[in-house]
Length: 310
Image (cartoon, rainbow, N blue to C red; front, side, top):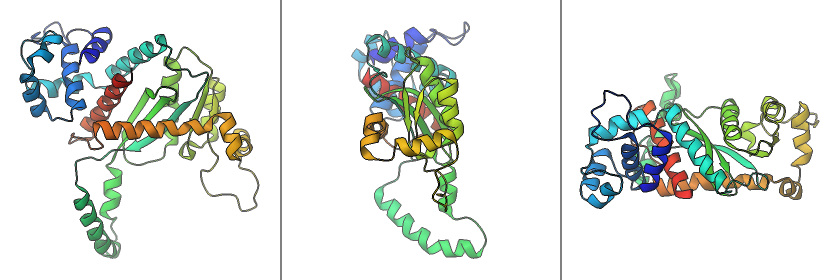
């Protein structure tokens, strides 16, 4: 809680407007939101928890706990993209000063994952799977898409760029729907490149990001060394290498286990570890009811994870 308060104090103003009531400051509210996310509480549960812990409130200069409506409105303001990026930039600065990133030794890893839009039990999921199998044929007969397709289109999606040496998230992208990964390669990698003092390092991603354009962006625009397996799409029937200069280069560079290890691509699995850490420690389900609030929840999870690392 103190770390979250210190982070927000150095990144954000005390109040959103000079006409604010000034009952609480933005750093104090962000610290309360970090505790809420760390302990997997709802807004009402977080209010009750903070009211029972006056020592926690005293550490950040509060004499009473903010109510759940105040916390909800604060989340809507503090977890917008621009302010979440300011907090990530300060975290990256802290990690750089502590010499934690070490991008010269290990690459930057990029990956995406989906979160549950609401909490469901394992038994409920199994029952839904059985029901889905029985209704799938009926949906085809009526010419409509199955409920599974509608569920996939509404799933929250988070893409992150991770410093593999310390598991710190340097940049993130939030969206809705399990679409292709290639479009958000550029914003995620560029934000991580911009926040790193070392501007020449390796970036590793899985085949979902395979694209000649992504290689061009990473290598020519930012001066990075991109490592992406050329496995997107169907393989060529004539057995020839894939099209594109850098995709053909990847075909030979990542051909064997030893070559992948020598070039550093095997460190890409560290981003999978970070996704697992975030879901195990902070939960894989989101409490938001709309696409916008779910994006805010994913940004808060990312920031709280970085606070635990730093």
